[in-house]
Length: 258
Image (tube, rainbow, N blue to C red):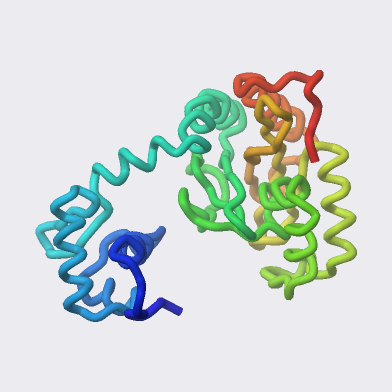
């Protein structure tokens, strides 16, 4: 629920509410959209939007709708996690995509979700709804399992003990079973999802580590169920993940920090 015009809130917090109203699937918003999504008074939204336009954080199209501005996008590319990681991972993701002709995805953890920060798509492969910037559940996506497996015990408990959403008949919703799967992910370095998030879609993911041995991302390949034996895809995915990790400064001597 959007926060309303609460007393004591700063100008910056209100402007952040406006900026955060933009998200995948809602990248072009009207003033009315922003007023409704933020819960702020129309006049307040209009004033802040004009300030954001002047700063280049927002842009207005010919249809009067607002989008994220170029200057804000440029600022976002400086995020220390996403820029070096994407820059390093892209060539290896492209190689995987070229070799397998399947969807290849890169994700990081954002709280209790995984968020896609890059993807190579295949016209031949199964149609999937996930897009760059979209959040995926941690308990039933392959990238999510890998990221959750290497999260803190507090995070694992919070997710596992919550009411796990069932997306398909094969979604894991039992906390004990989920913990067993996560333990296996930690041991092997990869995770698998077989029609747990979407029917007819399987995925295998592996971890990406930084120079300190911390898991900072997960790399996955998504295939149509039955079209590919995941055990034949897995070595290529793991190799790509290790290659990205080495480029980030990781070595086997560092190990994996849990």
